[in-house]
Amino acid sequence: MLFIMALAVMLVGLLGTFLPGLPGTPVVFAAALVFAVITDFQYITTGTLGLFAILTGVAVLLDWVAASYGVKRMGGSWMGIAGSFVGMIVGLLIPGVGVVGFIVGAFAGAVLGELLTGRSPEVAVKAGTGSFIGFIAGGIIKFTIAAVMIGWFAWSVLS
Image (cartoon, rainbow, N blue to C red; front, side, top):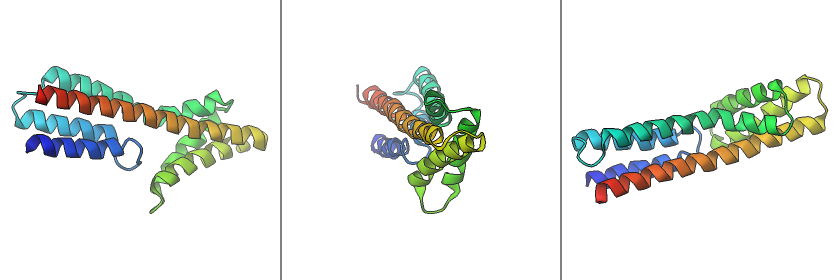
């Protein structure tokens, strides 16, 4: 029963890899940690938890880096990157919009940052598009990391 509960929490965490406001990979890690402690590390070792901690750190960093990298790859400046970052935060703070606020905020922030530097609207929109692409790419990578952690967890417990 404990395994089923931990797995259910992990699946909620998997959803959180795309839903801002729900810390996806950290939820998966926390479920594995609690399970390991309750079962006295019988199924999940400290080595596995260490690996999960590293993977969780990588996934969390991706939240902040992916959109910024997308802006830079599409020719944006540091103002576009900063705008994307601020836009993500503002988008998250708008009640009731969820993932849409995060994505639109990152896009709008990048565009505004580029416009404030005097860049053309075309360049600004290109930078905003880069933030969107970065968000999607980061989400795919975070989802993959969380899925690998869940698979490893299940294999460790069931084998």
